[in-house]
Image (cartoon, rainbow, N blue to C red; front, side, top):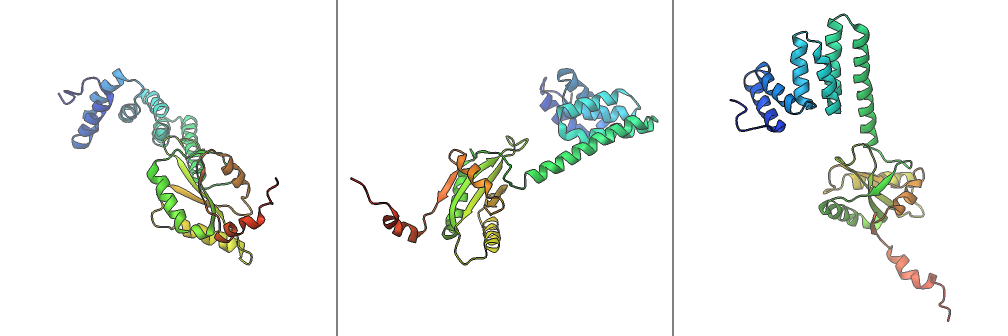
Length: 250
């Protein structure tokens, strides 16, 4: 009767299974998980639960359940691979166990590499229009405005990374105004610190200042449609513009 009213909705049934598992026991939740698997054989969580309980019973069918769980939810790879390895080890199949452990390690290494990728910007990256919510754009404009005297141009874009559709990586790119007698490296560092720590900077936005080393970024940013967030003309430059302009030819 626990699943009354949830009909054939796997998500609703899974909520029931979790409630039973947390209040009574996961063993008692198994019939609900099995019902889910009749409706949706590829359901990741239900397969993981069925696999884990099957493993405790010494049932080799648990391996197929772990495989289905990993296919449905890549994030389940470390847990499901670890359980499969433990099961196979207990069965004396150490070679098969090692291949599952290797799979868990490879997943972890790939995840770490992706985390690094999501937290850095380099000239070999690919960028696209940010297409971000207006409040993020407005907040970044305020941050840049606040440091306007040192900013030649600011760009807002999205860095292309795996999974970037669900969790976009937004980049606030800063082209700094350079001054004649400055220590360039120090000025770059200060600008990065100042903007990264600016109050009101939205979470999850990476700030990147163009330096001599990553100069190649600028051309890429300029090529992205609507990437320019703000351009500031230094006052003296604007005042001198009429002197620099070539005389109009009649």
